[in-house]
Image (cartoon, rainbow, N blue to C red; front, side, top):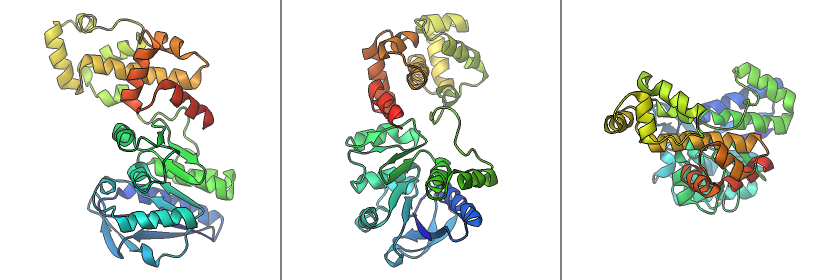
Length: 313
């Protein structure tokens, strides 16, 4: 039997825990005795999630030896809830457990414990810039659903904990059991396509007013796409367009165009054997250096590093 411990703390994200718990539970229906699930916290008792809903955990000091430690994410990962005692427990599991992992921003805990230095890892897309600044020694791969580096596993935002658990189940019990578990959960066994965690076009949330314009931008990234050009296409003066666009989309036209270009360039780098310079031209950056600066702003890494990581994965 493999004992899986899920570490929680005040203000944890409840789906980071509930999703993997359900996956391991269902896998154990197909292979009885495969997993024992334990919820762990610094002190025993009810622990409040960020939603206010509570889960009961036992004190990690009383936990049996673990096969797998999975650290949940949530607001609590960036608060004093992650104290030295918790970090010490995590470091100890890195030595005694077969594998150690995190869901979403639980990667902050692994990084704070020093367990991700020099390793490949991922976390929630909204946290990548902050994470890269805080932990420059980590080889962050922000465009992945989950990453395995040796026996240290990390996953992206929230529901990616289910993907992570399915990958572990496949490693432990075989692809057939992982597939059956995914079918029972009514989720993908492996998510199709690339690992992009969100669409820049969707994230802009422009509403009906600029939806058509943004769709046109995405289809015409090789155009200059100046404010003058965009305003003319929207039938507005430059000044009114810039103000209305920022109010609707929450960002400037120039930053929106850069986000769409970065998204398209990332997809080309993953899918096609093009040179970085060719990708820069194809997506309207014009030159590789301009694209490199945009990638560092968006992902914390240059294009070449992300491409190497994708190939290694």
